[in-house]
Length: 169
Picture (tube, one colour):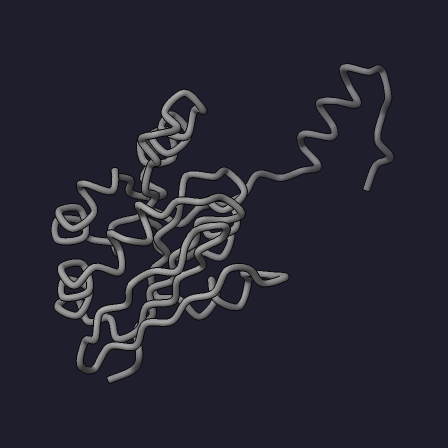
């Protein structure tokens, strides 16, 4: 059986509630039942988590790296805060994504961003209190792959509005 890694990122923020819930014994047991063998936590400005001692399951963490690209690419599942940069990085890498909303920041539109992406089938989202329930109930293979927009179309529309014309290719 190949290793299945879950990568969790909070970006540059502090989201200790997510780190605490995802590294809890209860969540780790659910991840094991789902076939995952490894949990990598990017904790940002948060505090160091208490890591449960779980047999046949590796848990590691760090605060920051220059790039999260390798962790995203090697992950079988990414669990992320609702930052739009993190969401776009994971979707661009075509990885299954579960976004966890920070309920303490509800006025910052994270909920709306996650909801819109979920409505079109690109990701699932939940709050920390529903993390275990969500992991047990969703099927990540049902997610649609995200297809990024064509930046040239946007540039063409913008140039047209501004009265410019693009050279023919």
